[in-house]
Length: 169
Image (tube, rainbow, N blue to C red; front, side):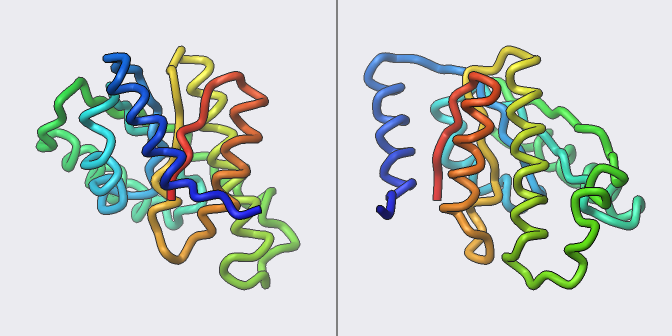
């Protein structure tokens, strides 16, 4: 059965508005440009912490450049509710261990699925550890990524850590 994750998200946002709730959300971000569209949609409903966890980015200089750009962008963003930044561990060994044997997989294949799983489960773990009300990712924004797969993995991480995942597409 195909799920319209955009409608699911809109239903969640409508319910939050109806009850006047402004929960906290940990937004896993792949990069500043993708986070901009997500922030535009979510800042009216949540106190957002952007979680930059991307051990798949290499070399380290490129990773650092992207972290700095994410931080710079957030400083200037006019969010309705508090907006903060949290950098995850830059643990490339964890990514390479996950990717071992999948080096030749095409875009969208098993390596991508493993990378999504790595990042979303870390986001779920951190969301639980830090007491967030929700967590989600910017990755489903991209037309090059499999939003249905990302939402399934997010749901699995949600069940593992007991923090609701905000579905999106």
